[in-house]
Amino acid sequence: MRVRCLSWNVTAFRINKPFNRLASSDSRLKKFGRSIEDEFASIRDHYETPKHPIVLAHGLAGFNELKLGGKFLPGVLYWRGITAALSAKGIEVITTSVPPLASIEERAAILRDQVAAKAHGKSVNIIASVSCIAWYNHLYSLSNKIANRSRGLDSRYMIIATPHRGSSFADFCFDHLGGNVPKVYKALDSLGVGSGAFHQLTVNYMTNTFNRQVPDSEAVRYFSYGATLDPPLWSAFRQSHRIIDEKEGANDGLVSVQSSQWGTYKGTLVDVSHLDLINWTNRLRWFFLQLGGYKRNFNAIAFYLDIADMLAKEGL
Image (cartoon, rainbow, N blue to C red; front, top):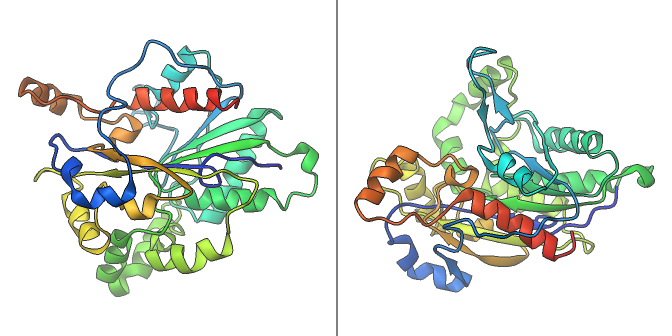
């Protein structure tokens, strides 16, 4: 497998958003370079089509399609509207599904096999969501160990919303679980969802173990985005944002801007939430906010179409 990448071992992207402008005025963002407030607010008339298929790989605790009502109700799509939007532009899209909470090693190996099976020897561009930097790095490491390289994958990776250096919120959770950690692991394992990913999200593991064991490749180009959020009182990210802010500074509720940086940093996306990133925006909330005069600053479909456009312009 010969790998050429644009983020993680190719491209890391992070995103986040509230409905006010406090995040954009955060003076701490200046040292990280460009702040992006509304570049992806709407869909343009034209986007270039990349040469190679795009693989959408979900992040931690993710899925491809969740069937809550069996065959009687439509499934819940992780990449809601995104797959269809890319396909409508003539882009070949491949979706994958790996165990949601398994270890980096397990997810990387399964992802590698799924991409190999579905790509049928084609070069691919892999776009990955939250917390994926780790297993893509491992995927690249594994790919270099494949003996028959003529049957490997030629691919580029673009990572979105990733804690490259771990998350202090993960540290907080482990500190407060204390002696209950083994019980939580046992419960998750009994459900068949795995538990290996959790300790790999900690700052200590990512910084002192993973990043040292899986170094960057000189054959890979790395790009990254960060994001920041100033969550309202009722936000699900309110508590986690506060905890990370105290330890690492500006963050999107789960990952700090500092941790999301890798390779060439493309800028900080302002006021874009973790759920907005995969187009899980609360439409009812935004309906009332827009009635109150707030302008929506991020459209996930526009963001992914722009990524495809960028890949096309890179000749990929």
